[in-house]
Length: 395
Figure 1 (cartoon, helix red, strand yellow):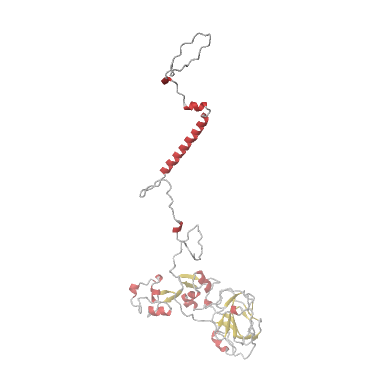
Figure 2 (cartoon, one colour; figure 1 turned 135 degrees about the horizontal axis):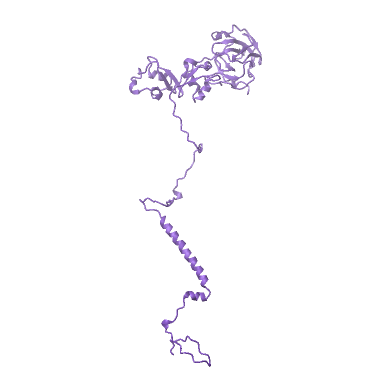
């Protein structure tokens, strides 16, 4: 037989009958062996299956990531993007401007509720004075200066805060300034000059409802007499109703002030120039020393003691028509005078010498007073009233 033929039957055993002639197999008919079978015969089949499974899983994962990346790719310019996040633009740090020298200020706080600011007021508010009120306190309620309260109520207070009384109805201006009633023959130029403002300040204020187109000549403007006008920023000199100094050399100056005026005073005690507090309390209940109130209101109850701050002579003792009620004035003989007002009782008489710390009266609420307190003033020389805080011992 040729080399191309292969025996597929075993040789017959010796002594047996001769085997049948084997059937030759052509090469095209030879059975093929699978490469998987070969791996299996070598013991590598299970390992190959595991590796193949992992490779297929990795390929599947990469395919999913690629598909998602294609799906979320940013839309081209001019086309609206319908899904997926937009790419974050890249910013060069060096291109951001640097902030230097940050100004100091108040940090804003996060507020849950938004506060809508109130619209500025333009109308006149009427306020009824309550017991315990004073001009300074009323002004603070409306964020105004005390002078504005006096300027807007000149015909009731006459520039004297001591004239304030419970039940009195006051005009409260919307802004600091003056309140002026137009008179027949007035001119805008003259009125403005008298209140230290410009005519335009009066005309432009919306609350006055003045139409520049119909006003005409500012010298004789078309403003009806009796019209009240708010003058923003308007000021004038206050008329002083403060009680003048009275000395032992000239006590007659107080005759116009009331029945407490004394006659001639010949001699008397002279002070040391050092002072004590006139009452047991050393704090305020009412006005402090200001341009419109030339003294301090010391807290106290009706009947509590009032003492002389230094030795001297009584030059006024009795009722006062300036609104001080029962009042005492002492001339200390060294250029100093002291005044004690709104007393409930007076324990001294005209011309009497008193020592420092001597009882002279009792705290009250007589005259123009809205509650018990001691109105106290100090003077050095004629009409030269000083701030008592600068001369009394520390509280």
